[in-house]
Image (cartoon, rainbow, N blue to C red):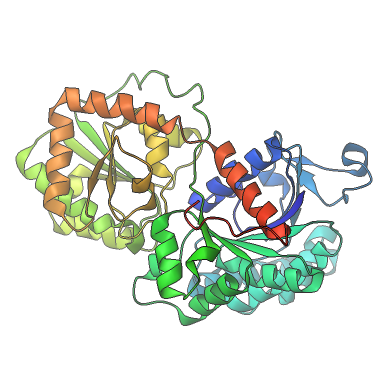
Length: 446
C-alpha cells in the first residue's frame, strides 16, 4: 500500500502540534510497512538540513526522483517539497507581510547585484512573482503544483492534513481517481471561536464532504465536524495522537542551578485558542496565597504583547517570565525545570504538550475542553474559564508533594501506553476499508 500524503508542517520546520503529529504518525507508518510519498509546501535548503539526507538516484534507486529527500528512520517514506510562502499557523495578514519582506529583499539584491546575480539567487528572483498574491491564492498554487508532482508518483490513496492541503487533496483525487482521506487536527472554530474566517470554513467544509473518510484527532473534534460542518458521523473515525517513546532525557537529572521558587509552566502558542489570559488570571490568584512561585510562558503567537501587558497590568509582571519560542533540547530543559504544567486551552482538538510533560515526569493540569482529556486519567482537569478551580489545583500540587509524586508516577506510566504505532495501524485499517469496495464502514468511534 502506498499513500500520497499532503502536509504543511514537518521537521525541521516545527511551529506546533501538527508537525509533531505528522512526524510521529508517518514514522510509525513507515515502521509498519506503509509506503508514503509526503508532499510539503517548502523547499529544504542547506541551512535546515542538519539531519536531512538529500536523496539521489544512486541512494534511492530508479523509483525515486532526484529531487526527493529522506529522513533517517523513515525507510518507507520519501519527501517532495514545493517552493511556497505558506507558513504554519499563518493568517492572511501575516502572509502578506512575509511576501512583502521577501519582495523587498529581492529588490535589494537586484539593485546591488544586477546582472551578476548568482544562478540560485536569479532563480529565486525570477520565481518571486509566481507566489500567490494572498494566502488563499498560495493555497491554490500549492494545490496545482501538488497535482503536478502527484502525476509522477504511484499511490493508492491521498491523505491530506488540515485545511491548507484540502484543495490539493481534492485536485489530486479528482485527477487520479484515487480516494481521499482527510485528517483534521484543528477546525476554524478551534482557532477563531465564533468569529470564523468564512473562506477557511468553506475550504474545510468542501474537503470534509469530498473525502471518502475523515480522521479526527478526538471525539471533541468529531463532534465539531458533525455539528458545525454537517458531516455524517459514520464517515468520521477518531484516531488519537500519541507520543514518541521516552528518550534518555526523561530520567535525566534536573538542572543543577535552580532557585527556591516553584515553576509553573505554560508551553504553546500564545493565542486565543490556548487561553493565556486564563493562565495569568489563575496565576494572580495563586500568588495572592502563596509565595515562591514563578510562572513561565514559553511560546510565540499573536497575543504575546497583549499577554505581557496584561501581566504588568495585573501587577504580576515580575513573577511571569516569557521565553519566546522553544524547540528541541530547550523544550526538554524547561520541562526538567518545571514543577507543574498547565494547559488552559479554550478549545484544544487534542493537545500533545501534556503528553510531553508527562513523559518528562511533570504533573499536569489540563482543560476539560481538550481532546487529550479523553485519553488521560492521571491528570487534574478544569474548565478553562474556572480560574478559581485552576488556582486551587495549582496550589494543591505545589503544596502537597505526595499529590505531585502520584501525578508524576501514574501520569508517566499512562503516557507510555500511547503509541504512534497503534495510531498508524488504525489509519491503515481506515485506508483498507476505503480501498475495499465491499467493505463495511469503519465504526464511527474507532
